[in-house]
Amino acid sequence: MVTTPSQPITAPRVSKVEGLKERSRALREPVATEILQDTTHFSEDAAQILKFHGSYQQDNRDNRIKGQEKDYQFMLRTRNPGGFIPAQLYLALDQLSETYGNHTLRATTRQGFQIHGILKRNLKTVIAEIVRNMGSTLGACGDLNRNVMAPPAPYKNRQDYCYAREYADNIADLLTPRTGAYYEIWLDGEKAITAEPNPEVVAALQRNGTGTIFHDKEEPIYGTYYMPRKFKCCVTVPGDNSVDLFSQDVALVVLTNAAGELEGFDVYAGGGLGRTHNKEETFVRIADPIGYVDKADVYDLMKAIVATQRDYGDRFNRRHARMKYLLHDWGVEKFRAKVEEYFGKPIQPFRPLPEFQYLDYLGWHEQGDGKLFLGISIENGRIKDEGSFQLKTALREIEQKFALPMRLTASQNLILYEIDPADQVAIQAILDRCGVQRETAIDTLVRYSMACPALPTCGLAITESERALPSILERIRALLMKVGLKDEHFVIRMTGCPNGCARPYLAELGFVGQSPSAYQLWLGAAPNQTRLSRPYIDNMEIDDLETTLEPLFVYFKKNRKKRESFGDFCDRVGFDTLRQFAATYEPATTAKRTRHRVGVYDPAYSKLKAAAEQHGKPMTALVNEAIEAYLKTLE
Image (cartoon, rainbow, N blue to C red; front, side, top):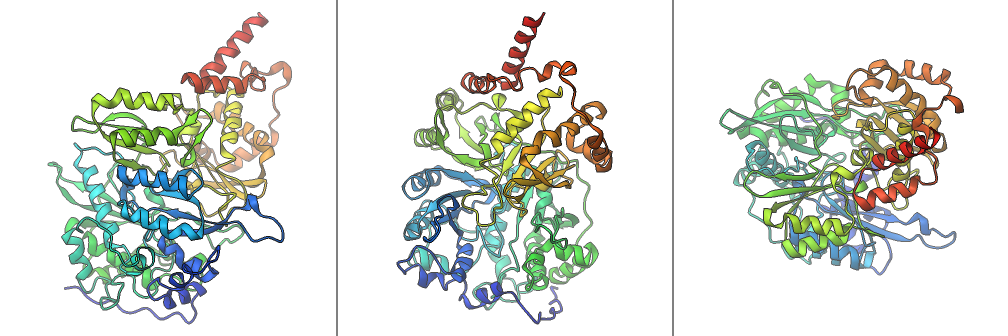
């Protein structure tokens, strides 16, 4: 029998945002009033509530002029469980970005799309068009459950992957806000045409207990105040960490029996990567194993976890409001015990799992039913046309001709699937003609990197990220070549502030914006994103990139174990050892420089890079050819 847990002591004070949520009439006001006003922007209060509807109010800092009003724009983010984007929705987003946005789309690290550059007067039109084309922005931002992630691989012959996609959809349905505000404001009350929800999800919503103590309200799970802060979930399969599961508030791992039938889920909780500079009480944390739940109980357990965070999360200090701090403050045992009060039964012991691996699924693959899927790399998630690179045109042409569903990945890439093998040559020809590199031609530093948008539109950005990372990767590649590690690669991620949107704290080499021209340098995460990195340098001027990294790479080359990754090496030897070597390191003199130095600063370097892109050949191969040719001239 489900029991009602003891009620928490009401906090004597709450943050300003909590008051806004209480007075919002279930997310209606002041957005509903201000959307009708002929202004370029919303009030600060309305902008907070607008986040729940999937939009951030921003201003383009590149266009700021002293004494003039800010260049207000809006970013819209879609909510796509498991990264699923039907062809109809993609084509609608593509057209909306051209008509009302900045002519680009951006794949996010949570398997959704963002449109940037929308004006307030067009916001209602754009949201309505998204909804009418099988999409939604409801709950993509704000203090509630965000997009539920799942491995993007569309395997049809792997039941565990099918279950992961199914339960990501169902949990997203379970934790979707029930308020009618979204359709009232953006579609004048018109209801969207959606698939029928899973009956088990409907039943879980209707059950009293297990955290559903607001069943007489408009929001049966969230209640009047919604969550203390954003809440992130994923569902994956054993061994597949394509979703960065350890960064999630809750992660479920599908467990099947020998016949491939679903038995239940291992459960992790308490991950989170947001932090604030110079605030030691804020920190990054990876999720802990909590236990195992049978498939019949998974929705009630999810409700119980949400209710525990809803009722006991910090509602006064928003920096301390994520569930990771509740796990940290209470410990796993106390957290589990409180969840069990809501759940009404003990949580079963965690079941053993194989080691997790990072998978990006780029290139052509069989999906298990005779059809193919294709993973396409999108540098920093930005779908655009720029010079000879015409990714946006290519995807539009492919979708118009073949109407393929797609899945976005947690690494800002996308997968086209349900491809008839007879269409493979034609699809690849479109991509080749539009300058979209095959996965074998992409520099591996680029392939395994990510950056957040940062400047000019993100209000939290301290410095550059997306616009800076490409040139920084080129500098790192040149440096690796110089020290004799021309084929080395590792996970690099960059953010323009410490909030961690591109998950730099799970990168082997992480750059975190510290000041307009400087970054914190984080090292030592596992290449499969199962271990956090740690801060190595607090304030590195970007002009000092080479002098900072060269001794680290040299020491790595000399002392690594066989096949040891850079992140594992840094974690093993320790930062004291790295700093000691760096303090005494002296770069080789001109006479002692190796062949890897040759060509690094050659004026032909950029031409070689362009040639590599043109011919679909790895840049390192062309550079090595140039080095060999140069050495022959010295003989």
